[in-house]
Amino acid sequence: MTASVHAAHLAHLNVATLRHPLDDPRMAPFVEMLDPVNSAADGAPGFVWRLVEEGAADATGLRPAGENVIVTLSVWETREALWDFTYRSGHLEAMQRRREWFERHVEAHLVLWWVPAGHLPTVDEALQRLADLRAHGPSPRAFTFTSSYTAAEAAQHLRTVPPGRTEQATPGRVR
Image 1 (cartoon, one colour):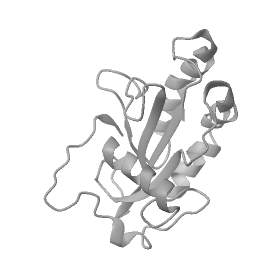
Image 2 (tube, rainbow, N blue to C red; image 1 turned 60 degrees about the vertical axis):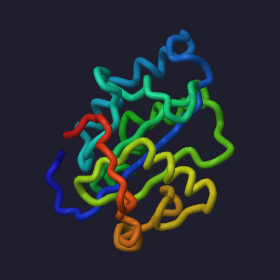
Image 3 (cartoon, helix red, strand yellow; image 1 turned 90 degrees about the vertical axis):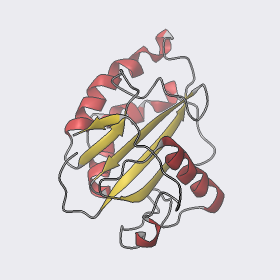
Image 4 (spheres, helix red, strand yellow; image 1 turned 90 degrees about the horizontal axis):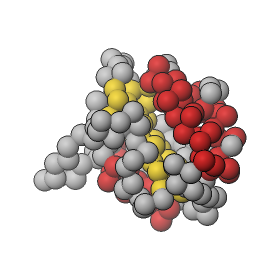
């Protein structure tokens, strides 16, 4: 994991409902982008960690939100670092073409939240944050790029593991 002067890092979950199975020829352009985009993320300034399936290069084989739903779970040093990667890198092309490969979501499909530096969120934790955003709207606990909160504003929500409960770190790629 990268050394950071930040006391908090930004966690990010994105869910996407596939239009077709990943081995369908219509999904080939998306699948071909996976390695380059993930490599770009791994090397991006401010990148801390991303979820990957054990023995794989990405998390597309994990289906914690449904058989036809893929997830991206990552941690970044700052909101700006995630924003820059998302909207100012090769990742943007994938976003611009997302309607070719993914269904349009009618509810929130992306959630951001602050975690203590060094904490790697679990998929369950991430899905709980998404459910919180969907149920209650943006708050310091679960928000979006357009309705964001600073780490200081979210400080009372940084404790991500309820007392008496332990969670193991999720497998991932750490820089």
